[in-house]
Image 1 (cartoon, rainbow, N blue to C red):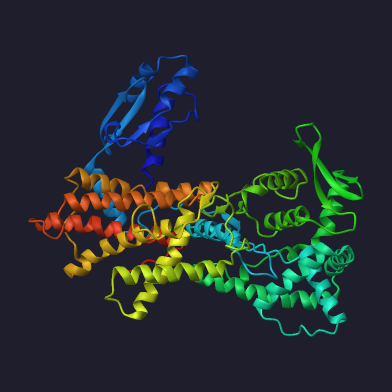
Image 2: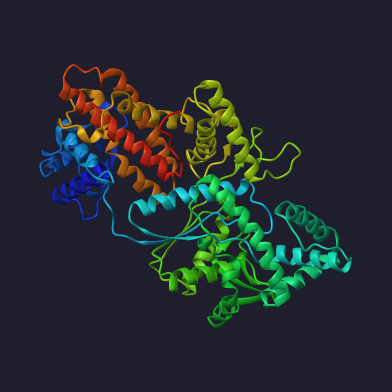
Length: 578
């Protein structure tokens, strides 16, 4: 049940019946304050202005065509033309009962789409660092929510397994062999050192850098010796990536890896097709596309470089091939890209070019879901104390260690195994929730103290809120399925809680529409707060009337199920006690 969508449809139909043109937006929103009702229709003033009518007069006419008798006990005009809608407690109770009886909480499933989601996408041949966290967990939360709504999701881990960095690594290995050093056995920790040493040679030696670029071209051309070592680098890196995914409770698997190299065979064809359409222009030896809509302040057009002068390809070439694959082979309806906000111009350019060149259908929605940076408490990009890049696995281990100390101090009744289980859920959940609760386009400050707090919109608070609700049934020895009395919303706190529970669908619709899990975090936080208010004002187990007790237990059970489902969609494991 999406109450907002239902009201929106009803008010929009009444506006048309009152004389507004078809498609006039009703602009129904949840009311910001209780005295303005439960929902508010804000589209009247805009419609009246376009029609040259008095807004209040148009609102009066509209109300004559608006029948909400089954779901609202009061509909009133406020101010210059707002329409305030007060929902019936009895109607909300019926909807809550339906949510309770349904495995999916009565969430409406829209017409299914095939959605390709490009997320995580670490560069191989080195360890994942904190810069990969946001793409990985924001993308995964949206993927989980899309699948819950019944969409067919194709995960695409577009790993960086091609390009200059691999030429650099191959050139360094070649150098070591020429010096007689044996690098046959490589552990991942050695590969990190190996990468840094190769990068230093690349930065300091022009001859080495030239050789690295030559080896990139050989690799892209299918040279078997290059490919053999490339596969070894990738295998080591992917093993590490999937250890991190497992610890993060991220749903990516090896089968979801579709790296840059997967499109290598199509890159020359991409260039040929663009050339055939007259889109390619040679500029200083490189092959470029110039689109008029992308101009600098001085009026010059920003190029999209498709092929370098030395024959090498770039991100744009690979992305165009990937889009063509996602359209023609995967038959996607939407393609979502969870990539750093700093790549916004790149994606605007390649999306525009993909459509202009006919590489994708007009109907395919290409969407860049950009995100901001994770910064240290000094407001700068998160680094180690020595100024180096923070390995993601090290960050997660530290989060678990800090959570372990916190939980042990708060409750010493748990045995060691339980403490470790709780510490894992709290520590990893804290890192994920602190990120997911921020709007993805915003930068945010990483702080263990803030994210591990049991106060505010944090994972520890949310995990505790769930265990608190779940414990009601455990302490009472009652099975939720045994509750026979009808759900009745007699008190204001009961109605407010039920209404928030029934806004779950509105929330997850926003998550998948905008690729923004922070909506779900805020919803769960507000839900937990409303439950606390309900719990304080409305005695549950001590209620004198069994019917009242059972009704309130039903509300508690629906709250627990909603909290658990919401946290699961965020990829956060819940606990039954902590």
